[in-house]
Length: 527
Image (cartoon, rainbow, N blue to C red; front, side, top):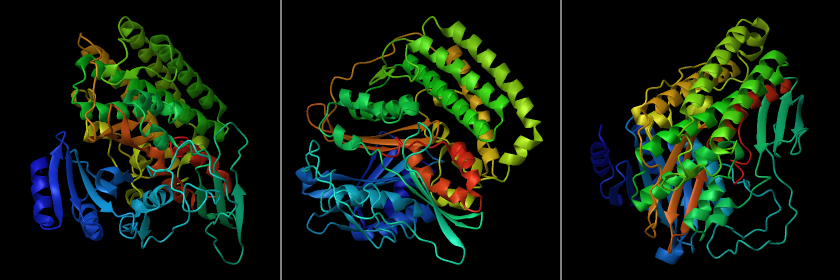
């Protein structure tokens, strides 16, 4: 089914219900509908047409049309097409129908919209605050345009609600928000019957920074630097998603050498991230040798990255219109040598740990995320792939030079810690393969094209396959090269609920191991 065929199907299916049907950037189908038709249309897209909900957000467009706008983003992953459904909500009646009952992945999105915009998802089963912890004043909505982001309103003191599980022998174990380490804060409320966990509720947003508000009215160049600082270990993935959205709006075609360069740096970031995750898992099962090996290889990758671009975290490597300069020129041979060395060390290490029956016994059948739960929650990246969702943005929606390179998406189905480990190990080898291919195929030429102007009030999706998974950013430009609205949805937002489900049925001491196998970002969630 081609993009045009999908468009015709939408026209036939929703005749009389939709308006302003259009195709943008060769892969986004957009249309508008009335709010009361949302459950029917979204249900059809999800259940009949097989498109998962990958993003849902609001924008305050009262200055342009007198209303708030809601955007529902569905992905036809096998065809590389996004479907964006827009509806308007009047501020005099700030209510819209909830779709959480039929599309469970909408759950947190709708609660977020309620907290930040004051729009009520009618029929939502759980309207407890998500972003605010009972200390934010009621009736104050920071993502409305009339809210001054420089203000610090007086805090309130209301009790935060948790889901309480009742029954004989059931008790609660609160963990956090402050932890015995340097990780960011998050509160985990375990409901336990004997030893097994029967429910886990995660309370996040302790480090909510107001990033999306900060970007309102800021220049597109300033917002680029903000995008790099969303989550320190996904610097390149986030900045690349932002750059792609702005480049689409500006109608800019990035030079081919820059596209290949972006693949190299994105895969270096993936290697660093996965090697860190593998180190953490091995540390939590007290497998010192393996932890040291993965930690050592991660340091190698950091050192190589730092030598090439003078930033271990890949900051200021990307640029709107390509990459900031030709970082890879002259480093091709040393980078290839590093990759061969890493490949050999990784291969030898895996042979050793795979023969350790005690280690395998510890990670097999631990923290299982079943396929249906993964689908319902739109689990992404290694967490989704380990459960049987064999999707990858680099394959489904090829960007940069990925469409010209050969690589394999790992195929696993058990959804346990062992499968998540195996996915990340295999992705390390695929990352090495991709970097080597990109270096060999990289053409000569420039690496940057200036982006002088972004037309106002145009919008586009930018997306990457971050180390943690599917990463989607939406940008609407404003006047004078500013950002009107910047919506960020990192993979951690999707996978935190999946982690809570994976813990059920395990004992509390398994939680650190399961948590490390997901390795989700607090900063990438608590925007």
